[in-house]
Amino acid sequence: MPNKSGVLEQNAPNANFVMEGKSLYNRRAKPVDVVLKLLINGAAFLCVVVLVGILGYILVNGLGYVSWKFLSTPYSETKANLKGILPMIINTMYIVVITLLIAAPIGICSAIYLTQYAKQGRLVKAIRFTTEILSGIPSILFGLFGYTVFCILFRLQISILAGCLTMTLCILPTIVRTTEESLISVPSSYKEGAFALGAGKLRVILGIVLPCAMPGVLTAVILAMGRIVGESAALLFTSGLAYQMPKGFFQQIFSSGRTLTLHLYQTAREATTPDAMNIAFATASVLLILVFLLNRLAGLLSKTLQKGTE
Amino acid sequence: MATNMATKISIQNLDLFYNDFQALHGISLEIPENQITAFIGPSGCGKSTCLKTLNRMNDMITGCRIEGKVSIDGEDIYDPRTDVNLLRRRAGMVFQKPNPFPMSVYDNIAYGPRVHGVKSKSQLDQIVEKSLRSAALWDEVKDRLKKSALGLSGGQQQRLCIARALAVDPDILLMDEPTSALDPISTQKIEDLLDELRGQYTVIIVTHNMQQAARISDRTAFFLLGEVVEFTETKLMFEQPKDERTERYITGRFG
Image 1 (tube, rainbow over the protein chains, first blue to last red):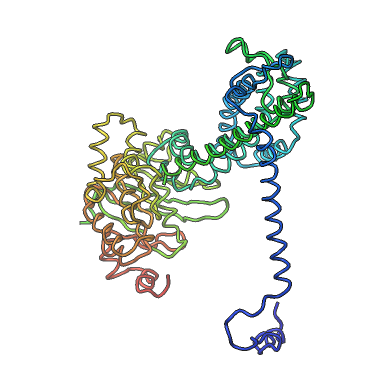
Image 2: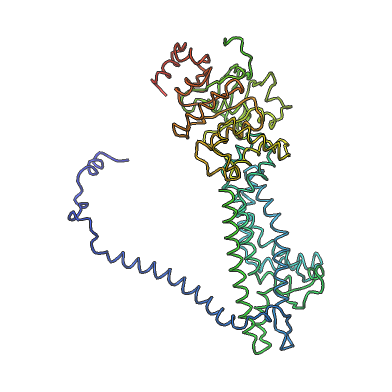
């Protein structure tokens, strides 16, 4: 509430607020500005240096060892001439594809339910809260849960399928949240337009809302994919460390198999051969490149999808 | 002339509530077939709300309920037997802001017919061309049917929305301030288009613009604070308003 004197003060010329001189040219920068600018630039620089440092260290140590032979031969802990990572690449693919096949439909459907059908009340709030909490839980806890429930209770043993089910739990919150956000951001005028033409609710959602939200949904899926490729703790418990070549397409799903991340962990930890560290770094390089390619793919896909709608 | 027109839409004692707030008070209107009826009145007077009750778009607003009766061709549209999707097919709607779907011009028009079961490509082609011609847009877009509708200008987008509404073969067109987001030239084109649609469709247009109501409508209803103050032939209303409030509004003394 401005009182009488306050108003007067505001209207009166303020002795502390008079421009010095009339020139518009910049005068000398203030010391505080200089220090802050240095701090900000320094922080940004530090981030880049750390990132480039890690990437460089891994690639310099690893890339030299990556060859076609490394990528295309099986692995053996005992035979010195069998140090490839083909089984791990295959296992990683298995886990990525099967997990997404399970998690994406469930995640997208629940996001559609939460945003389009559910009455926005306490229940929905509770579900949102839970998904947020779930996405913050350390993955080793998911591993422990997956081991006791899927491997033991469901008698799946330590297997790729048990790993996939566990990973489904890990990534579901991310997929639900990201999909929800992109569904909510679809302008309601599109929906109104479709309803006004006599379209039913399901048709409006499948024909208008979901296609508009597709770039976001895709981003959710690719983010999840990156998470799966990079996961180790949850899989250590559930899909295990076996490195044999798959014997059959479906048989492999029910047997144990180590992924690239676990291979990296195991070779570096055990160091059974003199070149163990080389193998670990080479595996790390392959992982990095894979994640990079997945991210690029995500960017490209959502760009093309957006072009289709704009 | 006005007395022997067939009634298309009959609104009887319509009350509408948003939770505890009553937005419409005892509206009764007999809207004649194949004429253009304008709803005018100051902001917040209930004209858009009243329009939305005619294709039950108000169903989607939580906390909204109505009392009274609205019938189209003698059928109560709030009867439990009413198929809302068929109702909305018969009563097309055009919104204040053009809202084409983010897809091609062709798919925008074909969306409605597809929803209502048209599958044949040749039939869809015919519907798309006919609707775009009726909305005076065909010549401007015939070479870019496969391009995104969002690349059209605002006025073209609004005519596209009119074409989209016409494509499901309605007999009523509900227009909620269809030109308020458009420039004068686009507005002119829409008004010309409405003039061409006169006699084929029962058009109800909500407008803020009294000149627009005077130019294009056959009958006008003046809304004030959720009530209809006066509903008569447009010419009569603008030349000899019966109610003092109508006179004050159309002469610009409040609004």
